[in-house]
Amino acid sequence: MNLIESQKKSVKWRIPIKTISEMNCNEHWTKKSKRHKQQQFFVRVSYNNNCECISLPCTVKLTRLSPYCLDEDNLLAAFKYIRDELSECMIPEKTGSYINKNGKIVKIKGRADSDPRIKWEYYQEKESEQAIQIEIISN
Image (cartoon, rainbow, N blue to C red; front, side, top):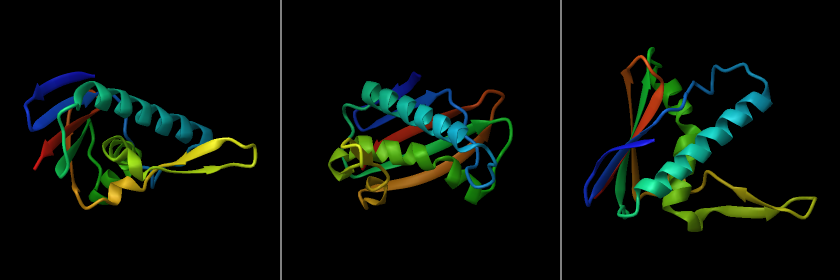
């Protein structure tokens, strides 16, 4: 997680994680779950380290860096859990929760990404190493 550039109104950084299309993936659910949790953990940690000056409304540019490219539908699906976690970091008050049958509080993610104050843009570039680049620009 290295910060590329930071200004008062924008921040840009890379995270060396693998993204794959979630739509065409035939993996066991435990393997998928582990990858999703890992992606969300790294996004949350890097967001907390890099984004103290970002305010809403904003534009989020997500760029997938990989040796091969995905089509548009698969690109959006590859960023699903990253988008959910970023939006939860930016708007934590939209996180829902419920109490499961064991009495534990479980957070419901994926509600904040539809907020109209966040505009999402998706890109991809060919690179030998797999990573994602996140750029958040305050409007």
